[in-house]
Image (cartoon, rainbow, N blue to C red; front, side, top):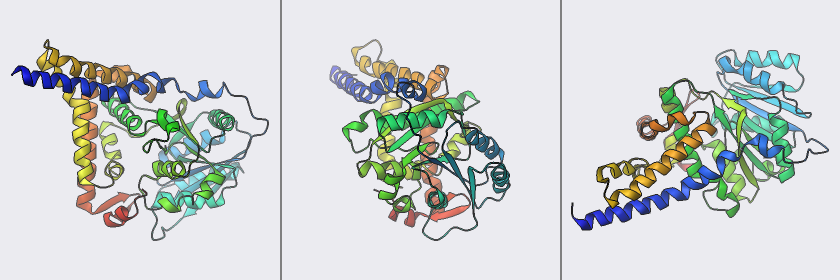
Length: 390
């Protein structure tokens, strides 16, 4: 290879490293320290605890609903209301929730038998629950999320001290297999790169976020933006609720839940790939052009740095290898926060390949079906595209 080409590769490698450092360094230095327990305990306890309505929308969650509801109702939060929505379940999800409600007056169960036109099932369920809720704050969560007794109290202690309108916790993922941990950790890393929560105060256009496991919203802000009505047909309901609040100027922050908030997202590595079927293509606005651009960017970030080994020990390799090292260190550090552990670092490229495959699989299935299948309902692609919240 000519010296001119080697020089181009050398410059390109360092440019790639600079690009990677923009995303990796804040994630590596700042985010793993942002744990709920550490941050909340630095704040004073409020004199009065506002009422919090925890909204759980569930469909066919029989294996996990008892543990999830039991954890919520074991909360030591002094002003708690739980509104559980049984959204057209075909199993015993609703019956189990009713059993809990008979024993605990803080729990209200809403049964939904049919889905009205123009709504996604989960968005409609949360909308209905919000109508029944009486809290000053609304916490939207899922039926498989496990809370520690002090999770809510620590969260509200932090939110009230910081005067926040929107607050998210990223749960610790309960995983079993090695490659499942790698894929989950890689997806978490991509989530941080995409949302860049450390830049939220700068009001950058992409610095908004939402987490389905823990989306806490001040009721007055939720009502002011129209609740779930503007995002009623957007598959990314949790993230788009964050975007809706962000565009209206409301204050938001984002911390790691650690062991205070846990979820068993999927039951295997393949389950994680399948779990991205609904959301992955939706995150790219159902656009093949955006998917191609995402793939190209993804290739340069995660795969191109491996080319540095082919040029070692020439100076053309230095920038590429520096980027390779930086992304692996960041991945290992963030894997601890996401519950995967640093031992998954050697599987970064495998995890990256699996996530990219999941995006292409999501696009293929969505285009082939002509829509998104979610909770036993097929939503036409044309209708979803028309109703993307921008």
